[in-house]
Length: 89
Image 1: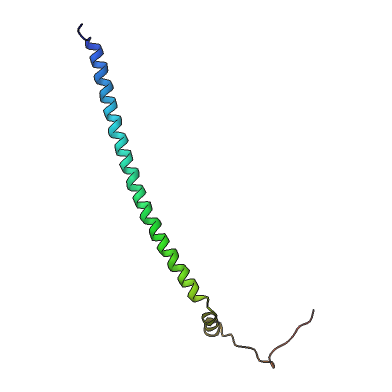
Image 2: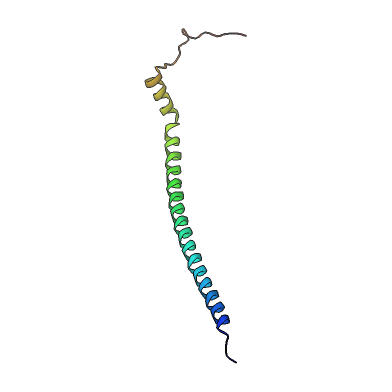
């Protein structure tokens, strides 16, 4: 029993289509893996920046810092009893 030339051509075409599909799938996987690595690095950088911002917020919101900024930038002063006015509703 000899194989038919048409059957061999169909099998050859199916093998070629299958191999192109494998190459395409591998290429897509590599592109997605590179994108994943890039996003992981970006996430790590954002985590580092978040930690730095939390530390900065912690130091800037201490009572001494707030009072210093209020005096220097806004010209605020502590009230004395002479300058206080109590308003009743």
